[in-house]
Length: 219
Image 1 (cartoon, helix red, strand yellow):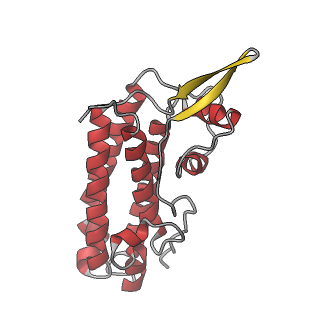
Image 2 (cartoon, rainbow, N blue to C red):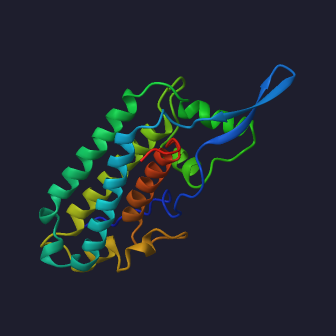
Image 3 (cartoon, helix red, strand yellow):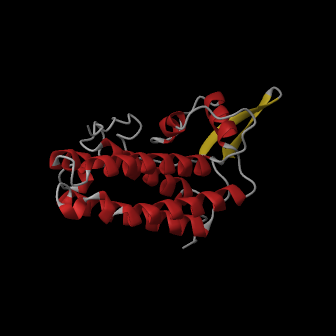
């Protein structure tokens, strides 16, 4: 019996606003205004690759909305797409992990709470969805968001394999990807295709996190 997709409560709202936070850090009895950088330094490569991946995934998901429930939507017709997405996320994660400097996500979250300033958009919820970070973890928020995107993509892939094949009822596949337009999967509120939304919104978080670090004048 095909498994039903679980509703990941992680991804029903898109990202908005900046990830850098102006926080007042106590320095003895005094306080100073400092900018808390919530991820490793800006990377042109990560920015470019994450943006391209986000665009390609949305095109893929939009196309699946038209072929889901037909032989063209079967998983064996698209396993190469998942392999491509997963390889590109792996490259982004490796590059993010190799960057030095900035503030770890653990420290960024702590500083944000100490300053009583919530992180913008979905970032705080995304960090919670990623699970508790090990004490002393130096991973940046960009690295953690990339890992969350990998996890969400694998969940979508596994359900695609189970629900979109000759032995499965077509409705199981059509409900996995929902009906057009694709934008309906990115708006606030419950999603008709929660697994697709989980991937799309996490990728949006990732792109927003990196772009927020882009220096003025950088292309």
